[in-house]
Length: 113
Length: 115
Image (cartoon, rainbow over the protein chains, first blue to last red):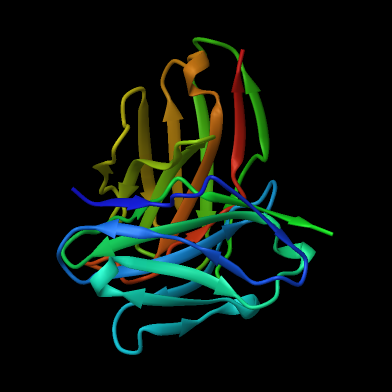
């Protein structure tokens, strides 16, 4: 069965510091991978996606993510965090032949001054 | 930009009531989804629809039904609301895809409280 693990429930980062949010997926086939962000009281907004090709993908708001097949990971990074990045982040995975996505449980990012 | 609109941001209903949550998208997407979101559990799929009048159960369909009479509208129905259905409900839509490689676009959610 498909599953997505986001090991960190909460992360606190100082404003201006770098950020890495972890995501691991299980299943042998080539995945389609997504990162979404949810600001308080809002729906989910797509940050970036990976289907194939270059394993480093760029997204909106200065985020990037790297697909590492050997580690079954798709970690989200940002070199310098802004207070407005405080939100909940969800990793999601899909596969060829499956119509639905499996979401991780989310990581809440807190940004300290 | 894709616009997915959920009819209510906040809704309070009573146990046993029949509750309708409405979702409308403006991008002619074939696929639509209903999720519920609970703290610590992430997003769980209730139902999805491939196209008009077509639906599939997701991971937690019990206590829910759906209706898709028009392409742009996907309704979630709580037949007899119970307190354990108090939650945030999210609707999403996307272009038709036999795989999962089209991104889903989300509405802002309906926070439903059942008293």
